[in-house]
Length: 269
Image (tube, rainbow, N blue to C red):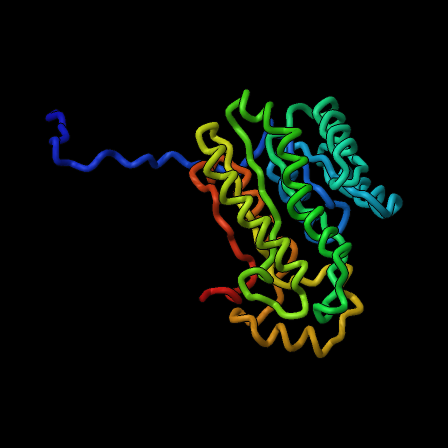
């Protein structure tokens, strides 16, 4: 049989080996994951094989109910309480998770406070500071606590949860928009800095995806937003969870410094 040879001008062979989303052997920490979008992210990571630390700061009974359901589904993880804006609590949480589940490979920075919309003059600096604490200080504290191990293992996934509000410049929302913009900039800089260690840093920016805290939102406001969505439907928490699982996997190993919107086309332009 004649052997086929490749000439010097031929293109290199294509790597067609699949890169599955499976996360077996990985440990993930998802902050603010006892409810809402955070819960969907934690469940998606666990469904793909990761051991997951579910974090909460308030609502002990609701968090316990979430974790009971999590375990009933056959997922493996731990429930841990910590304020992610408090340095001592972040250090203690990371240490506890690694003791119980192993080195943390994936960190999803999702915890958030309430974000009321109101005119700029009705905000005070304390509220601005709270936004910065959650969306700038929290990623800093978590990354600093985990970075040594990630560099040593030459593997890491840091996934910040941002928001479409930064791209859209939503009015009456200045403190939240400013902090989310800072989070996006931090993501880009850290992605460049950590790339040589095979550590990816990305940001996922959901649109308005109704969860528990939106139950009492005015119907007219919700209808007006939905009418603007090019896909003409509401997003669901699983839409965000699926993207997070992908970015945490080997399939996304060459993706870093990206801000990926999950909003049905609201920020196409």
